[in-house]
Length: 422
Ligand SMILES: *Cc1c(COP(=O)(O)O)cnc(C)c1O
Image (cartoon, rainbow, N blue to C red; front, side, top):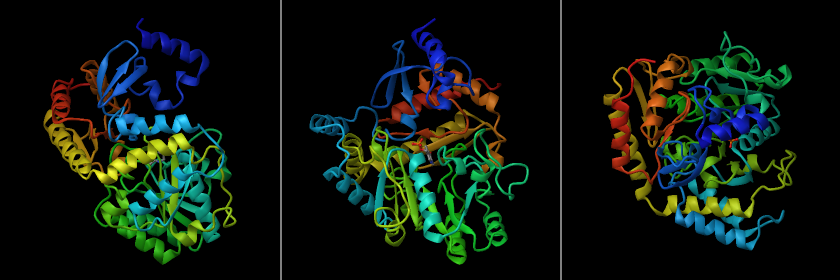
């Protein structure tokens, strides 16, 4: 047994599935997960000393690559000054200013500790602001693990939600309505059926948790129009796309103005951070200004703020970063299209995903057509070749600023030698 296997055996005795987040257990691809010891640039090293080109990047936060010297320096400085005070600090002000400078609709922001918390709080705020109960979400969009969002499409996609997880009460799920991604008609039907009751539509402006599914032309502007018509708020869950598609995230990239935006991942630079923000009149309903309660002992934590500020400041001040990310994303997608004939490779900016189906993949149903057995075989082959991909089909490949054209080409070469059968 190698070290990862030994650790996995110990882990399974004391942690459910041996992990602290399910996908890490390698359940969808088989085998023992690699336990990661360290990382630098585009490479991670496991406990057995094997090095991999990393396309997870901690699921997005490491957009500059691992061990960025500016981020590390900022964190070390913050640690010397104190880990947590439970009081207002300068870095929180700077962070909120930076987030508000990124995109016009965000006029005020509140820091929290995870993407889940950001979404949960934004939904409560939308309900408090509108005085309405119902929410529309899209099949295949992931918004963290808060109860009301653990709902997927059942047999009838346009019916009231049924919980997707044990332990979620029918009550928590019944106000969640499910629409189909890239299908404005499905949204309009729900808004008409539940006229005057929908507080918000929440959407990943690029679906990045069912593989990668970009919005069709007109989809996001259509959601904006429908929200205006029906008095619902539009919430962009930019936990992945924020500061990745561009500095102003998907809102800027697609030129659509949401009322509220949820952030996470990149804004913490690898530390546990989330944030939600948006229109001043809406955000003014959050306590202590307004009646919507939301709080956090460690919210705005100085070490986390230092990491996030260093990440975001570099993204703002070094415009070459997005050019590099986007061109490598395209290079990777084009290469994979040749290396994996018969696959549908979706890409937008630095988010890439090969689906093992003939495609096109435009929503949850078409994403589910992918042959997950073939993905698993591809994953294991790539891992053997020193390429660390997401251990599940329905995730993105994250390209970072630390990847080079050579890393991308090495990845494409490895893919070309992948088995053609599951
Ligand atoms: C990761 C993710 C979340 C949840 O964030 P956590 O920090 O894992 O709680 C929410 N929404 C989207 C789009 C995500 O990708």
